[in-house]
Length: 108
Image (cartoon, rainbow, N blue to C red; front, side, top):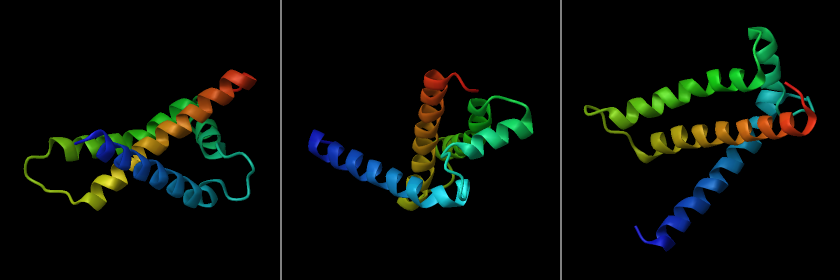
């Protein structure tokens, strides 16, 4: 893959991540102004840190991605790869936001 081809993959993936994050915002935060509220609520329910709550939610997507990567019996189409890869990237972006907020405001 050339650098130019890679750049196209990167740009398309980042655009897809942004689109999904924007689309899912209402579903996961409702009218709450705090974009990270779902992880904070999950943390309260599980008596853990919001980062740990996010990690628990993300683990389902990571396990699924690992299953796909290690499968020797099944073939996955690009739509399936896109969904799992985008989910994992988006959870990492949300984790970055939680860490940044924690560093800035000292919240947990």
